[in-house]
Image (cartoon, rainbow, N blue to C red; front, side, top):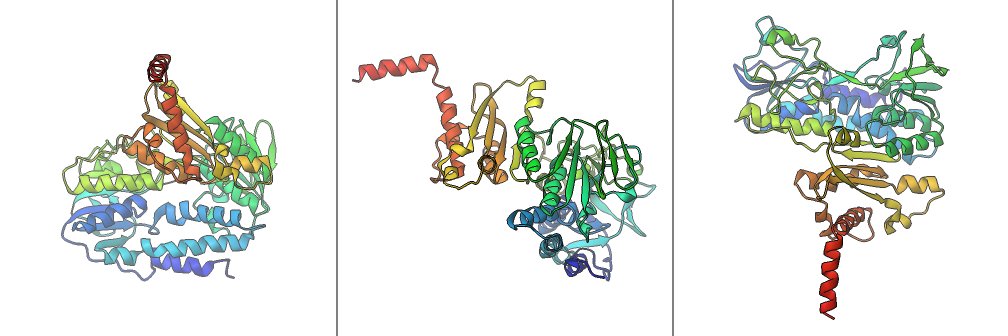
Amino acid sequence: MSYPGEHFDTKSWQLLCPKDYVNPTPKKKYHLVVVGAGPAGLISAIGAAGLGANVALIERHRMGGDCLNVGCMPSKALLSYTQENVNPDFDEAFSWLREVRAGIAPHDSVERYSEMGVDVFQGEACFNAGGQLQLDDTVFNTRRIALCTGARAGLPPIPGLDPSLILTNENVFDLTTQPESIAILGGGAIGCELAQVFSRLGVRVELFEQAPRLLPLEIPLAGETLAQSLRDIGVQLHLGAAVTAIEGAGSIHTPNVTVACEKIMVAAGRKPNIENLNLSAAGVDLDSRGFIAVDEKLRTSKKYIYAAGDCATPLQFTHHADAQARVLIQNTLFLPTAKVSGLAVPHCTYTSPEVASIGPSLDTLDSTGVAYDRYEFDLTELDRVKAKPFTSAAKAKAHGGYVLVVTAKGTDRILAATIIGTDAGELLAPICLMMSNNLGLSAAQKTIFSYPTRSEFLKRLGDAYNKSRMTPTIASIFGWWLQRTL
């Protein structure tokens, strides 16, 4: 029996892991062999091949990695579908995510990468006893190796948790029938996004987070605003209490409550895909978290072996993997002068409202003793937002939003920023550009923004910074001058 959107999956899998594919004859020597065809691996391989290098790319599952197959795109497809449709249908929503995935699949396909000059190999590679990279009977002769094997959902040590009975991001998008209820363990970005999706689809959602608020790595207001938004659509929140036990397929226990749900999904941490690489044979060290240890040039403890993406960084975002891949290309093919240190890496939770941030958290700044100034703005004060009709104060708040920009004490140098509201990820983009190019907050005051737009918030913050420079001494000088010029 077919399931909703099955023909789209058939199309995707034939492009990303064709059943009839025959691995190519390996070249005598490669400049670069990349293990893993997620965002970091794909960009590294195609970028190096585009520069004329001999490149091999090895993937054990599907091209595209988590982002295309079980991460960014499926989740955003469901979020968009359920937000834009009144009383969205489960079958139609999941068919849509599969259609979106199939539409993007040609870009990451085996055929495209082969046509671009990359030797694509299907299978699971590992280091042999001699420390050489091997796939089946093929031992690769290569100048550099890039490990881009990604990560997967980590399972917390909860008594009774049966890996065979739970959902993670790796299989939740494979659902073919609508569950009556789902318990989601983890109130970070993944947990909150899918809680919103399933609740909109009419599923009873119980969301568990052991921290006292959702999105515990964001500013408190972000978690509080999102919590209210989720409660408004019926999500039951269980905050500040760890899950102590799970019975069978769906009974969740905390010190305060026992909840029964048809499905349980775990969204509480990640672990690297490195178990089968035999890294010890190659002399590749791990860091204290169990991820591949790399320096600022992405070199492992073996200088000819590099690593990038989710297997080697706590900042597990597709755009971060992209940035790392560009450093990796430079350093593996040419002089290793590029560095990942100092990158300003944004991130966004695509719920309604969205929460987008860049830079260290306030807790981190406080714990490291960094002095800073805060500039805050309520987006509902903008004329563009005032022109939008709302049916409730809650909707006005969600669609309006809040901005916090943190600068180094007494200067306009931006250290961090958070935006809460509609299209927060888009509104954060100019701040990302400013931080990456060492433009201070005063640069926004000098910029002309279209009126009326929500981007005017930056102008307002620039004005606020300039106003902060009006010390009593400067004010008295201005007063003296103006009196003399009457």
